[in-house]
Length: 141
Image (cartoon, rainbow, N blue to C red; front, side):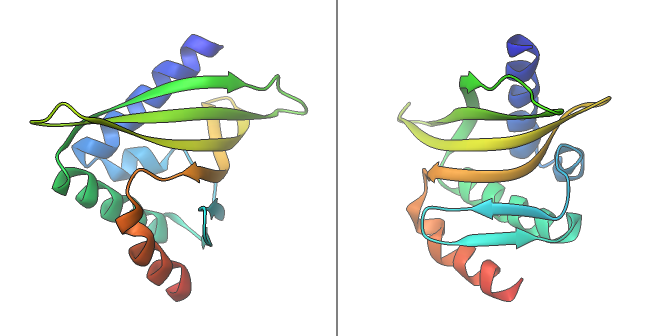
């Protein structure tokens, strides 16, 4: 299960950077609560999520991120088809080669199509400059 989850997360990171937002949205169940260190958002559907992921992609590319690699720290044993994943996302920035990290806990549901995310709790953001952007989105949702 662990290797399948790691591969699925790598694919999700690639989809985000490539701008394949609609394919990425298939990984989520809506409405999607998203907890950030200083606020929370409720993405009621794919349209709102598309805006958030597009904004995130814009800021990643703007800051020079060329790859996003997940490090799965832990996966909870499923109970009643639900489980949590603790993941660090390592963002490689070029040309410096610097790496920064974003940490999240994903609350998932096992489905026939693979794990789907029902809620996200970001415990550390790699781009604090996005705080105001996300705050504005949260207030408008």
